[in-house]
Length: 223
Image (cartoon, rainbow, N blue to C red; front, top):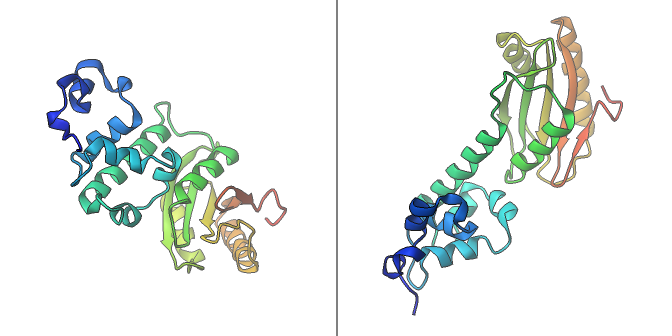
């Protein structure tokens, strides 16, 4: 018979243990159980959390809100709490206290691979840089279909001008998982590069994001 958490001894309940000993003393499953709040018939919150973590933390992080909500025993409310915690932890990890971070292709590329892993549609974004190549702002601009996104060079130029950017790095994901740039990707990049030059701005790179890595069009000699 499954034990209900409130029927467990107090020193075995995740919330009470956290309050008494601190969050660092809890297992991954116990921390997740606190987020879940409750279990379902036949499973308490800790058992449900262990099932969610069966494939590891990276697999859980890559699930989007819809995928989480369709897991038996989770539903929209629990899925929302998990998704909010994942996003909040990502923002904390990316936060800087010493001003805008310097642009680093490898760091940005790896971060984008993680961020885009759960997306099933093409998404296009840009990181705007100042004259010292520090990241002023990183924002998703367009959301497309499963195999394309309709991007306007005019809208990107307007966005960059509004933020008074000196240069920018654009990026988009390939839901297929293959980061190889398409011919459309290449022609669009050239058009945008030329448009930015007219506004005295520099296109630093176009990163194409795949399932396990990214492709730099600058490193590939396409810009």
